[in-house]
Length: 563
Image (cartoon, rainbow, N blue to C red):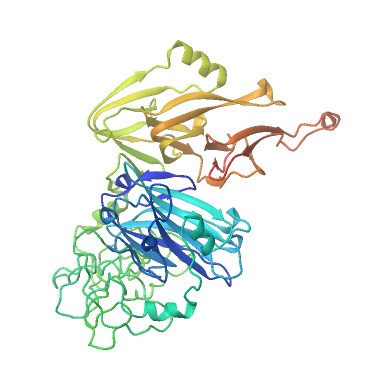
C-alpha cells in the first residue's frame, strides 16, 4: 500500500522498500502549458558541481546510468529510473523539478504528484495542486537525499523563474543557445526505453522487464507493471540495444487498471509485424507497452456503475460500482468466464476481501478502522489506549502505564490525560476503538500536535507533553493539546476521512473539528464574540476558531465531525 505524503514529510528509503532500483514518476499538467521535468544531482553543498548529473530532455542519463530519464509512460508525464547503490559518492541529493516552458505559472496547474515504485508496487506518493502556488514558474517537487542513508522528502516548493533560474540556483551554467524543442522528438525516437525487451524474440527478457510466459496449464495475469499504450499513433521504434543492467532489482510500476483480468489467460503471441514503441513482435509487451484491457462487463440490471470506480480485489461490487475488468457481475474472483465455480470455492471467495493485509513494516493498517503493530520490529514498546487491543498473536505482555502524580494533575487540569497501557514482547497487536478511522503518522525528528482525544497509540520512543495555546475570549483563556516529537510513529484516530490543508495566513479551523497540526505552526485563538450580540438572542455558534500561521510546509488536519 502506497504511503500518502504531505509537503514536508520525510522517510528513509529503507522504511519504504528494501529495493535500491527505483522508478520515479511525475505527473504535472495545466491547460495550454508545457513543462520541463528534470533531475539535478547535487553535491554535499547542494550545488551542481558536475553538469553531467543534470538529467533532462537533452541529457537523459548520468555517466554511469544511475539516473535515467525514461519519458512519459504508465500515466506519468515524465519518469526516471534511479539506482541508488550506483550513485557516486559525490552526489548527495537528487532534486526532481518541473518548470513551465514558455508563458504561464504554477497556479494554473491541476492536480499532480510524484510517486516512487519499487518491485512493481507503488510505495509512496506526494500529491499537490496549483492552489498551493501563485506566480512561480518552477517547482521543486521532491528530493532523494543522503543523510547516513538515502531518504525521500516531499518538498513542494515554488520557485520564481524557469528552468534556467533553477539551473543557476543550483550553481550550474546556462548555455548561450539551448536546444530547440523540435530536437527533442528525434532524441526520443532513437530507441525504445532501456526497460523494453530486446528486439530479438529468442533472447531472454531483462530481469526488470515482462515476466516469462506462464505455463499453459496455469494461466496467470499479464504483467501488471506494463505501461498502457498511448492513444495517439505510435512512432516506430528503431532497433534497440541490449540493456546494461542485469541485477534483478527493478520491476516496472503498477498501473491502473490491471493489464489483464484475473483468471483470464494471457493474450497469445501476435504475428510478427512492425513493433510499437517498446514492444517486440510476437511477445508480451514489456515495460514500454501493454495489451489494452478488455471492455468492462456491464453492471447488473438496475445498477448504475460509478465512473472509474471498482471494488477491491476479491470483493463483490456494491451498488454504484462496476466489477473489475473481465469479471461478470456475480462472478467469483479467479473464476474463468463461462465456467462454473469450483466446488468449495465459495467460502474462500467470501473471505478473500478480509484476509490479513501483507506487511513488511512495523505499523500496517488492515483497513480504515484496524491497525496492526509488529512488536518484534523496532525492539521498542508501544503505548496504546487502555482497552484498544482487539487481537494479538505471539507472546505479548500488557501492563499499566501510569502518568505519575504530576502527570495526572496536568492531565486533569488541561483535559489532555491519556489512560495508557504498555505493550511489549514478540508478536503482533491489532488495535481499534469505536470504529474510528486510523492514520499512522511517522515522525523523523519533527513534531506534530494532536489532541489527546485523537491519539490511539504511539511508539514509546516519542517524547510527548502538554502544550498550551494562548488566547483570550474563551473559558480559561487558553486551549491545550499534546505535542509529539522525535523519531517514531503516532496513530491518530478521526471521525470519518479527514482533510489535510497547507497553512496560510488566512487558514482558520474550528477548535472542535481540528485533529492535528505541524508543531512548527503558529496558532492563535480567534474569537468572534461581540458585546453587542448580548442584546440579541442567539448567535452563529462559530464564536471560537484557531488561526494558523507558519512557513510553507506546515499543515493542519481537520475531520468532518465536531467533538
